[in-house]
Image 1 (cartoon, rainbow, N blue to C red):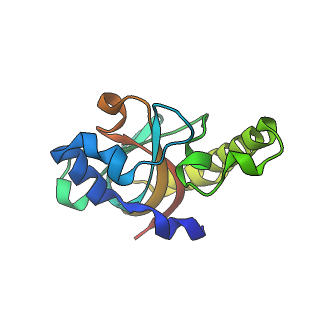
Image 2 (tube, rainbow, N blue to C red):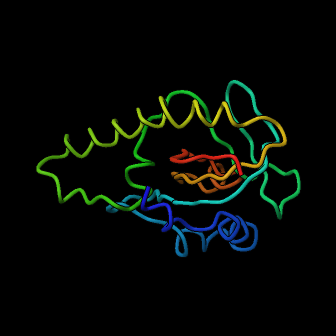
Length: 156
């Protein structure tokens, strides 16, 4: 995905979360409209430290074995992928339904293509390259660990 190069380095985002979480939105966040929530578009490398039927936990190289990123598995719902990448503008669509249809289609791609690949690759100890989006509605719950909706994944 061409936008992947625009994603923030996840280690820089996590370092900011540790030192000054109120700066994350300002430095790395993308807000749509007047919403109080915001999105992060991140990329990086993580080590698989946990994997079960519900989620995959990744530690970052600088974090030891602490889970800094989780990838919830299963049904994907919301606008994290559509809005997190920052590539689409709602005003470019004739109506809200078409804009929402794009979100649903992107979520289906993540559910049917990206998450199954992630599950297949994510065995304990593996090093994974990833890019994805995070929707932050509650900084206390959504930043520690980051809850990632992946858009690309590969074994390093």
